[in-house]
Length: 252
Image (cartoon, rainbow, N blue to C red):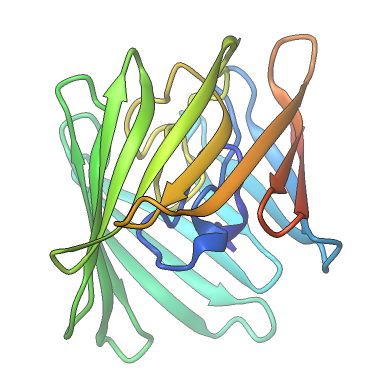
């Protein structure tokens, strides 16, 4: 379910699947996201519900197929357990390493039989923005993305398959739209406490280019805000494919 977010660039920015490249998530420092619904190109709606503890940390994310429970073991350790909703059977477990500020630096994903499925690494700059994400399979070639941050916003990225450049990204923000949600430009789960500092303004356009500088992906985003400036909905338009996604948000 993490691949459905539109507003905050890619939860799966490391994925080679272009549909996931500009996904976005929403919650806030004073408003908590309780539920969102996402419909891509008039397909079946996808829904997630969120539960938080007294400190505002996400504790449960319930999606259409799996429910993930967050156990904050210590200041440096978080364990997330995902189970299938159909029969409550194990789906995957995630062992997370936290830095001194509580941000995730490593996620080790395990199958129900205990074998390692995948590893994600996150690197932060001195201002607590994510500047690199890395995906490492147990065997074979991994991938990584590097982000350029300027004035509190991501402006460009380079995405690699192994050590080979796969594509570059260009991000356009609207300086008149403040990002009230507290979320950054990438991460694995929807949380404004686990993946560094949220960027300053809202994303309105994203383009990706091949190594030969050919346009390969083009998304535009329109945000409907409430009176406090929080997103009520985001409409994403795939310019090249003429397809549209709509994500709506409910807060508590």
